[in-house]
Image (cartoon, rainbow, N blue to C red; front, side, top):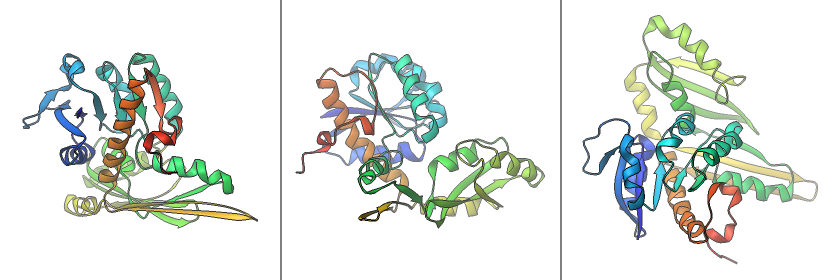
Length: 280
């Protein structure tokens, strides 16, 4: 039985908890958080180091922008996360290797980056891969909205508008006097909205909550040449539940790497597929 803990208890943290509690391979021994939680397994993140020898895998459920800053707090743990800022993945890996070189860090283990990253790599055998996301709720983009000062709540829906082209539809709840400033800030957020087709719709908190509950998403990877074509479609009814399931799979991979004496940061593309199961 793999002794697991979760750090962070937002939507992804809750999905991880459900997945671990329903798994025959894991035992949940703690939930670390920066805020106080009324949970039997709650542990303060500030004191996490004291539990390092009691935990085999720590699943990081913090938003991606916070992960580099929080790395020192988990430097004594072997970790799995779903870091999703494609443009900063190498920078993040370097940060992990600097802060926690003596432990294992498996990063980007979600559905994208993650599962679709593997599919893109395989699709290069049939040409240059193109990824089209949506329709669906993006957790990373929604988190970026909610970090803006003055935003009461927000959610982003990604709409495909052509092969490899998207519209970012942002539903935002805030004070009416702040709307102009907040819309300007949204359009300037690098890696998420800057330079993209963005529409901001201001609405009530109840409307935002209703959209957030949908939680579905999709992604398609295509590639073609004159002699062949490839087409992979992924659909999920819950973005966070799928991410949690993928993270748990890579948690088991992490234990294999640890048994081999591996240390350092690895992305899903650094892991041989045989570690996921020999299906030939």
